[in-house]
Length: 234
Image 1 (cartoon, rainbow, N blue to C red):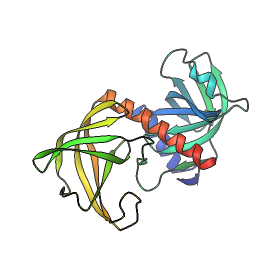
Image 2 (cartoon, rainbow, N blue to C red):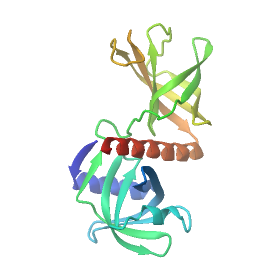
Image 3 (cartoon, rainbow, N blue to C red):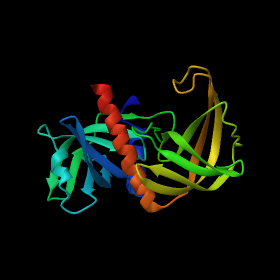
Image 4 (cartoon, helix red, strand yellow):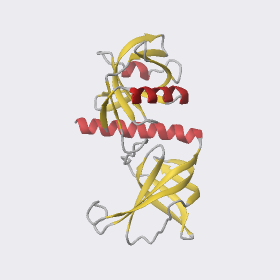
């Protein structure tokens, strides 16, 4: 993550988030656990120094949990891999609120979607080499995922190859996607503890994923990201 002062790029991303109805997650660490509330961005008003948000469900009890005594909200936008802290401006009823624009924000600069290593083992199943393969997911994002294989695993996947059916097993939820191989990189010996003799990493991007599965993935990636941030702070 890279810290950046708010400017034109932040304005552009916030306008994009409004047009695309991206989810904003307000969150706090309470007793070492992540408490979060999913919000929908309604308006970005630079001239009024405010962002208007509302809960996705009416009378969401998690909203009260994430509004701290200092009236500062931690915000994470998974679709943009952007995070910032902002002072609460006003709460309108039980569903709507406004926050002041932040002075600074953080973003994941290498790619639009931040890749995260799952806290618990997740898997992907797909057909390759005329057989069904099931391999552990090394990292995952809203845009795709990657697997890491040892050199002894005789699997060749060409860049650009499409897989019409891949099934992700993420914490007991089966997610069916269409995906494309975007890259295959060699891994040097001893770079990963699990691959002392080296191997290779194969990355895939999602071509098709259902709306409900994408909603699940947004929540999953957000929770993983926030938990990893807490660990870095500790």
